[in-house]
Length: 271
Image (cartoon, rainbow, N blue to C red; front, side, top):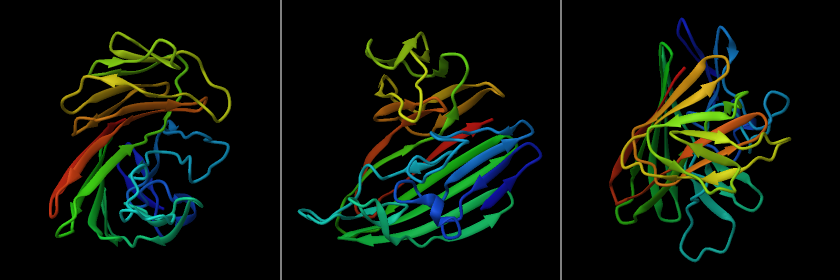
């Protein structure tokens, strides 16, 4: 694993090659933050953390393009390109051709770059993980390297915050709504859980929201008081998932890049 260090935090990031057994076919393999530590100990969780680990559930602060695999029009085989992962078999959930990353490791920063080409799609993906004091930033730049094909993009961060003791989960800078029979409910500007799930399976909900710009979420954290999460973009979909161990907000980025077009976005975490 890679490490980023300050006087206050230690961030562990997965090595796309050496830690391949931990990455799998779902989350971006470059720029995967596996855990964040301070003097209190580990600060992030996961669906099976700390008792077990599997690559599909993951832990820490992964992110993914996996809900929008890229295939040639009319293709009927299970092969597809998942940005940040490589060519995968969608049926078997296996990586057939992992993408190759160029990695630059400097004090306080990790930069990962890879180029994709598959079924007429071409893209360059750059990931930057930076740490200053207690501020962690994860920046993505995606370029459509095709001369003619548009590149549809559906991406989301999947941070796994520890499930707090109290039902209040996070305050939001944008108004949220939830149906009355869901596993979560909105009270004022704060999302609450309605019950604490047992075992691995937990409720998933797509929230209604009013964001037309970047959002700020203040997550309750029993050790720290709060962790602040910010996005540089206005989310399209806004989902939340949780189980007995973790709760995860997922503000989706949805866009289409024209031939030659690039887009950069950032998610920040202040611990």
